[in-house]
Length: 423
Ligand SMILES: NC(=O)c1ccc[n+]([C@@H]2O[C@H](COP(=O)([O-])OP(=O)(O)OC[C@H]3O[C@@H](n4cnc5c(N)ncnc54)[C@H](O)[C@@H]3O)[C@@H](O)[C@H]2O)c1
Image 1 (cartoon, helix red, strand yellow):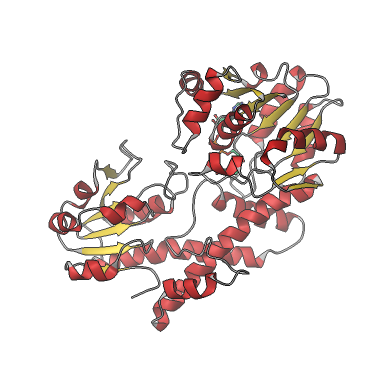
Image 2 (tube, rainbow, N blue to C red; image 1 turned 30 degrees about the vertical axis):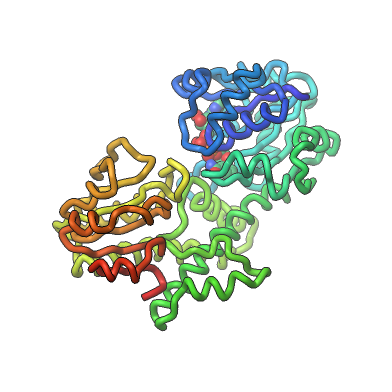
């Protein structure tokens, strides 16, 4: 079993540290946020992620997992150091590598001889070289190991990966990294650093393309009187197509797709290739957010100025508490700019957000609202008492931007219902 350090304890770093400890490795995780480290040392976690707290406790109790403040304090002794720090979008759409470079510079002088630095953050082509330079050590190899976990099922995805990609020029280091994951029995793809970096961006861009594609088809269905749910059923049984990511909605969001699609357009531009297809995918997504906003306006009687809009769902998808780049927040922002007052409910959000009245239950959010819009596909929204919702709303109008609810049942209860891509 190996000695591992993980730099950054966000969704990727904390999950990586916890499951590597579960596999038997000795793991030290570092972050720069003092409160986060204190919380983690006490066995609690700052994010909602199924099964992760249990895995962290298991690691702490077994003495295989610990948390320290500052990257440099995690790496002495470590044979492997995973970089799991943010790569946010820079103002020109490219990936901002400053967190990676800073972390790499910090650990460089204190790395063990022959250590391997493994980049798990999503980074553009050429970043392995950037990290090598920032680390500044001839005896240390840098490997790219992109992460494919999904928030909401991060632990499951990490323990049962579809594939593991290891990109490196140093074959011996790549094989050493592969040995960390041997118990996972996943297909292993060893590539050049550039291919590994492209694999990650291309995978996210492809998934975003599927969502934008089905949103465009949903818009077509509305125009021609077809039902997108029937269309998806007819398409998805084709094994070449499948059902995954063919769910129309308010557009994709979250901490990865928006920045990664734009970064890939930027990477292509830098390389002299105009990635027109991906630009179209991004454009469809931007338009989808506006279409949903306009639908709420239409269902409110033509304008939301001066009315209360109830919103169900604030996170960018269900089963996470992550609101980064959530389409829901973007729709809310547009509604507020057009004069609406927004009352919202989300199963995982209890704190107040600027300009939004966050309520404790779905009924309170509906109190006095002229329209209810469902923006995140939380399963519990199916099971609310729609009689109570009817009583709470000023007008019984629902915009179901996720096609989660049963239109026939709602119409029988006296609601006016509007979904996406279906009548
Ligand atoms: N969230 C996902 O679903 C996901 C999936 C695959 C890949 N990724 C990629 O993984 C990377 C990390 O994403 P995330 O969602 O885990 O980010 P995050 O923002 O949740 O966590 C990053 C953590 O790094 C810490 N940090 C920043 N600088 C540091 C430093 N110098 N030393 C120690 N800690 C430092 C931050 O305090 C934070 O806790 C990004 O490149 C992202 O694109 C994310």
